[in-house]
Length: 174
Image (cartoon, rainbow, N blue to C red; front, side):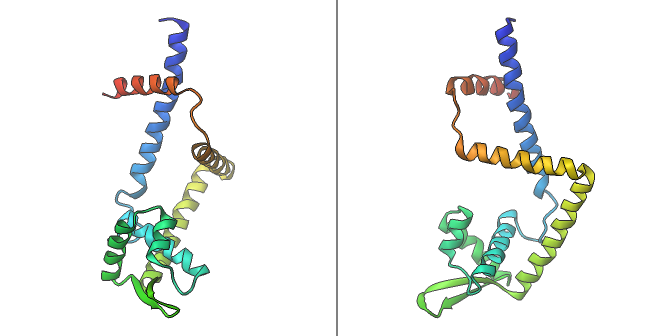
């Protein structure tokens, strides 16, 4: 194997390891650890988005606003809100200023459950910080912020290199 081939193989190994790490993190984050019992991750996130948004908009928000905030298709949001309303976790109220508009708010039960879930989440994060240590936890935040900024703004400099790495990873994974 030439020096160039060895370097290319090393360069392709790092993305593979990153993908594995992201996949492992994604898989453990919700499996059997639902912060709100009997709610899917999407339903839980919807409740948290409503809670946060209604702090600034106490009158509630429209389903279309929520869809936009969460970057979710309107039909998907409607379905999620129907489930949450049936469980008594959200209320839909007609907007007094615009009778055509419906505002979404958490019910008392929805508020109670999101508050409890937030306490659980804070405890888990405190445990992670204790496990990693303050400095490594700060470093983790910095790295995640950097990675997020990169993915939001950067384009691959050399699509050919990315494709050859992808092909190599596909062969190795299959």
